[in-house]
Image 1 (cartoon, rainbow, N blue to C red):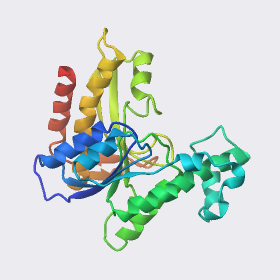
Image 2 (image 1 turned 135 degrees about the vertical axis):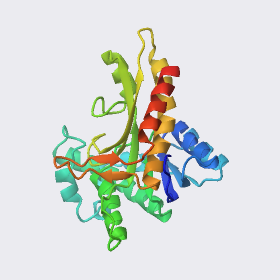
Image 3 (image 1 turned 180 degrees about the horizontal axis):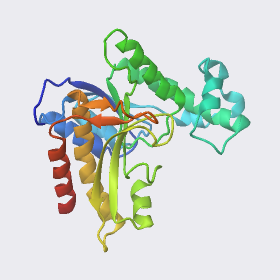
Length: 286
């Protein structure tokens, strides 16, 4: 990066559900010195996720957490006493399930939070700076998101730094706020867009609604198939995700103090324009 200053080596925990190609891209870039980070652990909700094999191959702790043992619990078997004291407040403030109400909502969130309590305990044992979602196909409840906002504030007290509380990062295969949800590439393609995009963003309590760190676009040519645009988008994902982490390592991600309606971050890297131009060239070649 242009005008490089001393970077902090980030400590990451990566969550995956599938093949883990973004995880592999991080591993490769760490190995050749392009990503200023270390991966402390890889965690998956899928025991067959190839991402776990990738981690083990590179000597990274690989952990499986079984969400199913919580999702299959009957209402009468939910251990309500193990839920956090503020569970009622979590239910009242959640934005993930607007179609659910009453006991159905409480049961859905209870199962979710019980699994996340186990997940949080595992993540915290590795003491990461950031939690990176790389194809992790689970929604995260307010309990999980607030845990990392609050622990960040506690860790930073008296440090003189901005207490942002943003520690969870996701990559989404669409140009947010367009096409949130699990089918970003498919939705972009079916809508007939002339350009598609990818977004790296911080995670808040909504679904794909958190503040944007970085975005990139790619052209969709008239005869493209869905598989072709996925391939084009993935080539950008591998570059952008690691670059956003590097911006965090170098302190190049700052809150835009001019914004008042919502939290907006800006990139202060002197090499930002060159990097984005390179992504445009990459998207045209792929």
